[in-house]
Length: 129
Image 1: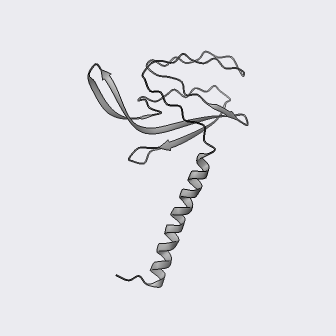
Image 2: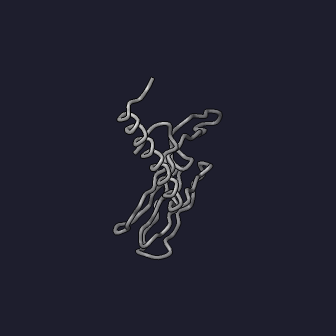
Image 3: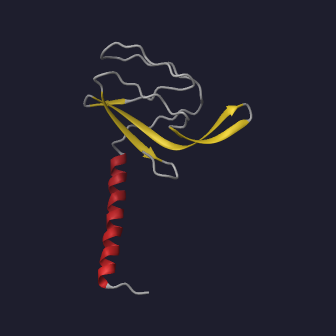
């Protein structure tokens, strides 16, 4: 099978766009906050804020609060959507989709007035939002 000149140009233009997208995506990964993964279903104690307005931290049963980093006054969180294996009852293991190693995923805790940025890395076999 032969490609005519217009088809070749269209093919190579699409291929170069895909390669450029991969290069941008890899360089952008360097700016992401480090993803924190919970490897057990143990509940983490809520963190008290070091500054800002006082509030009562949320206690999520069978869950944990996702750590964040501050970047120019913005709380940045990193979620990793991925397949998760979880024992829901003794000897009963299920395959789930979750975030940062758990299903349900971590609690994202913010207070009124916070500026927030979420980074999502999709490691699922399907697109996600």
